[in-house]
Image (cartoon, rainbow, N blue to C red; front, side, top):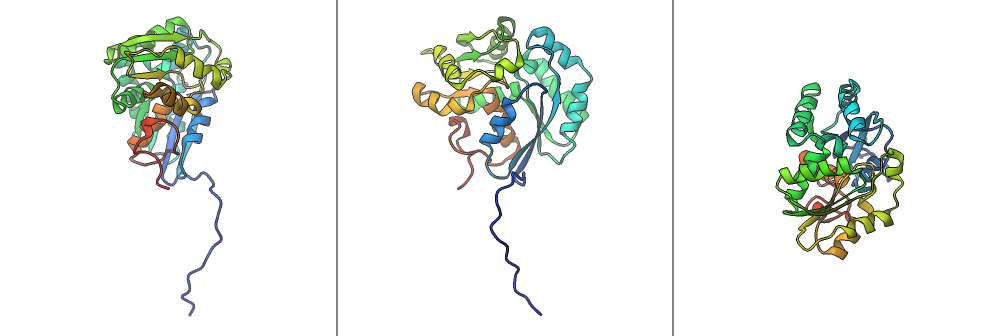
Length: 258
């Protein structure tokens, strides 16, 4: 009888989420959040997405999306695989009507899909700002002024006074994703202020994570983006070290062991 153990060749990484699987409810016309989450994911972390339609990046467009029955459908579809955490990947959509609305959104999703831990981009942002010890912040967004002002209000009502901010007045979702990283870098630098303990960059279809390490090195303070915070909070809720190195001080203690 042969008791020798069978040996196999070295296989290539295939993206398997055997460490943690993240479910993502995301905008149908958006691309950046998925791309950046995969870029930050260490081996063993995967993201699985269901989509909802956003008519326009305005208050009215966001409200139409959030009131549509497809939000529940997307939540159920995102949680159909064996996921560990479910994230609602829309920052402005979750902060639009303030903190109570964001918390109610989490409770609504938990009611639809009991099982996975649930977060939103806005809840993750507040958790990330706590993690880096932020007080007063600076804010960079690509939004129109009406949404930008609501971001300021959301941060302020959660103890983060916004000491300086700027926005880009973009209403088209595809245009958000096309802003080059060099412009994002300059945009973030433009809002820095001596009183800002951290800088927050909002929007989940706005490129950020490739520039965060460079920005932190230049500014000497934490830079938190909505996508980075969402991914970090999913790792935190799942209890795994699942980040590749190089994506900001937020991930201290969460990077893969190599």
